[in-house]
Image (cartoon, rainbow, N blue to C red; front, side):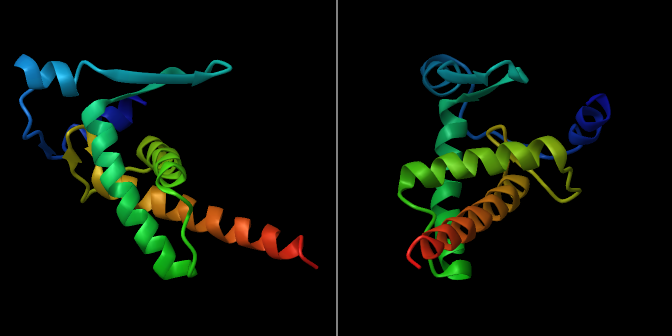
Amino acid sequence: MILASLLSSGIPSYNPIPSSGLLGLIFYKTDLTVQVLGWPSPPYSINLIELIVLLIIAIAVNAITERLTSSKVGGLFVAVLVTILGAYLCEQFVLLPFDFNFEGVRIIASLIGAIVVAVFYTLIRAQFSKGGKK
């Protein structure tokens, strides 16, 4: 974990929204923390601006998944959940040398993780729905 934080410190970061004042209060101080049965430790925390960035990534992931599998992940809510899961997994376990942070979200890692999880989710869901009709 320490090695990952040392390596990720070299990733360029872009934060166009100021973290002080009213915008900082709205976008950075409002957060959601998730922990189920003590996992993950420390709990996964996301603030409003990160959620907005992941929402935009979810729209792109849904479109890419539809092009790859001829089927959408689902509605926007399901796409956002799959994107958050894929982004979390890839951000925690994959360190890319060409990645960058935008408002605290590693964009390339989030895209790759979300696309992989969304494609697998869509293909498994399609397999089970076809298997049940036989």
